[in-house]
Image (cartoon, rainbow, N blue to C red):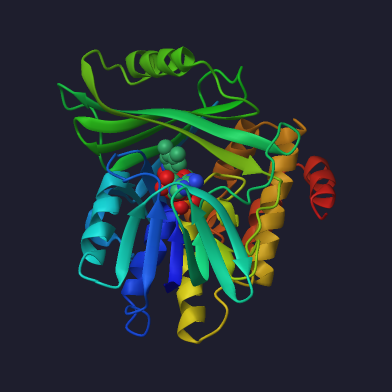
Length: 379
Ligand SMILES: Cc1cc2nc3c(=O)[nH]c(=O)nc-3n(C[C@H](O)[C@H](O)[C@H](O)COP(=O)(O)OP(=O)(O)OC[C@H]3O[C@@H](n4cnc5c(N)ncnc54)[C@H](O)[C@@H]3O)c2cc1C
């Protein structure tokens, strides 16, 4: 049987696309095969992102903030997000939500299998698994088959360990999320703590670094314990959940359309913002574009707008500055938060700013390192 669509990988981008297709009357009856090696039954990650309006997954938002805090040397700033809300969704809630919704559709088949190759022949896209070969008009791929080589010359890694902790006493202000606290040691590269309280007794505390390589697990543990004790001044707590992640922050180019009728989505499609690691909101924008194209009967490959190409250039420029150690992440983000409103920063980091807003943010950075990196990044 030939399917209309195969979704290869049912993680964030695969299920976001499936949900969007199933919400679209002209597409919801298409035959769809969703393949993943994993059952997606674990709460393997937490997604945070910001948006102005209620989004597709509003009903499963676990916590939200309208004020964020930024801390660095001689700077402690609480910022009002204006029209934006910073939101958190737990992975398991997201997987369950989309699976439950998709159950209503007999035309959607879920298959648990390991994909061994993705190809295209004549007008068909093929997915080869350990057990079978499946074909479709289009394959939407979020496995890493076509990913570029990541190495220390072209990439930094964003690596982090996060604990969801519960305290005995009410110690957190759940109205304020701590986006970045740079007041900790920078000996291993750009390093900050991220503290997102979802109630007065619960918070996600995450030790995050942008650096060429990961650390020993005991280092993340030691730093988390130290911060909770010495900075948050919490003596009694339990660790309810733990997450560990590595996100590429790369100059390498991720292909959007590696083979005929094969469309890369998610991180594999280049939708992880290289300068920050945020992906969730860019996935939502990309699946919206894909569905708009399919509705019109066009190829689903998203043509990057001129502005989006500019954002990718900005991202590459910042990665270049960090990779060549012209400035540290702490210096760059401190300048950004010292001089600009949160609304402008979030618009800029969310690829939603105007050129005038971009200039007002960039004019504060030292000219020479950014100019050199900017020219190098034009390639
Ligand atoms: C712990 C963690 C926390 C994160 N937090 C945030 C955040 O707060 N905000 C944000 O914007 N981004 C965050 N990210 C980054 C990004 O949003 C996630 O990595 C996101 O899941 C990327 O979506 P994706 O669809 O590209 O990949 P995934 O969600 O990883 O989906 C890929 C799927 O493909 C499947 N697969 C892979 N290979 C095969 C194969 N050979 N055969 C069959 N199936 C296969 C996998 O099992 C997986 O289900 C985080 C990442 C991690 C790891």
